[in-house]
Length: 303
Image (cartoon, rainbow, N blue to C red):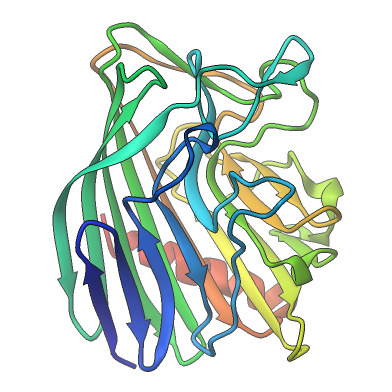
């Protein structure tokens, strides 16, 4: 199956396999300031064409497919919406943005598509906070599975140390979201969260593991799809705690700052790598673990 990239200059890159658009990466969105503008992947589809992402849901309009979203970076909110402070959510004037600066790589072969660019993270008042280098690499695993490797290197340019955290580090129990965040379709609500130790639901939130998966079912067709996210072994805080939900909505997030803040001194760099594996069908416990193996292989292919 042949991969292809289509670049809408100044806006987005769409990656297709055959006649299926696997995803669009919007690197220069028109997001409102209060939603903390940042690049995102949406729509995201399986090789069979089934949609596995949700964009700007009314309950959390700052959720956008898959995005690198951080709610507590020093005093800044790069997640969107209100900030959790002193036991409650408050809308502050701290919604920063991660803005595209320069496309550094856009290469496409039948087997691989690579996108890389630089970004400027700024406070709501425009002050510089982070310089980021980011890449996304897409490969086909087999006739029903594809993989994305997401890599980021964030350099603190704020002039002072930055502390990365979550609502849990600010006092909200078991709400440690922040990082590479996936929001699934509405029909995936009530689906199966899969951990290396077994399948379950919201009770798995907060567990530490190398990978987590989600097994969901689609409206209209009644078919299933599976998504797995794998944390690179070199990532800070590995293995991460996972922010995962099924009961209210479907989401996965390997959250490196779930319950412990991480300091980034001025001028230093913090890097993370993840694999996201997307497959048609419900693979069950063993099959989902096999998808995680494919994610490890994708990470190993990009040392």
